[in-house]
Image (tube, rainbow, N blue to C red):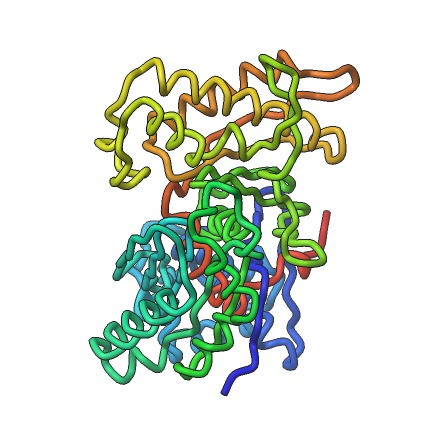
Length: 409
């Protein structure tokens, strides 16, 4: 039985303008293999010569590593490249069937499970909707789904399952008053350890991470790689959460709940009353506005067709959310000088883009002397960020190199 409990996703290595140095000493094989896998994941298929040049490893060392990774089915040969001086090169790329990762997202209105292959492609996805999450139903759903998917896999592929990651909000029993109808039943989460219970059912490691931090981790591992070393991340879901990336590494803090941006205090624009970001920039707030207008919410927030309501109502929510986000961004930037802020969430692409644009405009209204306004950009994952972030936990822990292991310069 495995004893893993919880890990932060390490992400991949931003190599632009930097050299990732390996070691030619025999005792460093595991590190060097992770280094090669991280390079190939970020850059696509690479030749031995390219890897040797970037890492500083000898050609012989790289050859040994590549042969070992190919033998372990983690890498596979690509098409031979001709037309250059010297011998034709054979790039090596990730083998999609080299490893598999499960990701479980526990949300306020639904739970989802994905099966992700070594290239990061989703092979299976399923979802269960509820009025509020209860431990017994979530664990039952996870056990039944995982058992069914494992039963469809060959014995060889079952042996390549690297683990299950779980992304869920911490301290569920303290949720917002909008879930008060759940009553004391949410207290059941106080004494339940979902990771430990699922670990008893399966012979692979189980990892746990805050859901918004996991979404940020998905941006690091699976998102576009043109991001700066430090950035702030918002995920707009039924509530709103965040992630903090410092020096290319997800920072979770002492309790794993760093960047709890939804709890950040803001000042209401109309009445000056103190609020929190979750009061204006969450889908729970939009849902309340819709119910007051006579709309019945039963469909997925990430479904563009479900956003069929008045432009005025959407405009009011976008305005309030954008102003709240701008206040929090300015406050956070006073502490850490971010170059970039990413905003993602369970929103249709057009709505997400409009929110990002409005937040960028509002930043100018809340700017304070001595603080440089950061760039506001759209996240690159979307509504699947939390489940993919969960799947990234075993991927990062088992196969990717820690960003802090890279030499700076």
